[in-house]
Image (cartoon, rainbow, N blue to C red; front, side, top):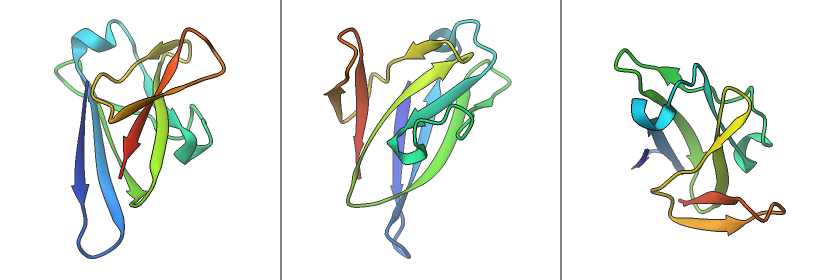
Length: 102
């Protein structure tokens, strides 16, 4: 998994690109990025499947904020981001949200 940040000079936003490799995706046919930037809606940010079996998606997020998120594969399996800036505790003792700081 990887995250790339591209801060725009023309406005206070950052283009954040998320990528999950074929190996990390396993046999998933759909992966969504769910987080506080989309009210944890699994239908909002669906990653694009690529020819090599990986998935990618880019989102514009306002700078000067922190965002919590996780990946949801096939609407049932949570995947953790290994390159997050930080991790935040959740109400579920076996899970932590990834945090991206912009």
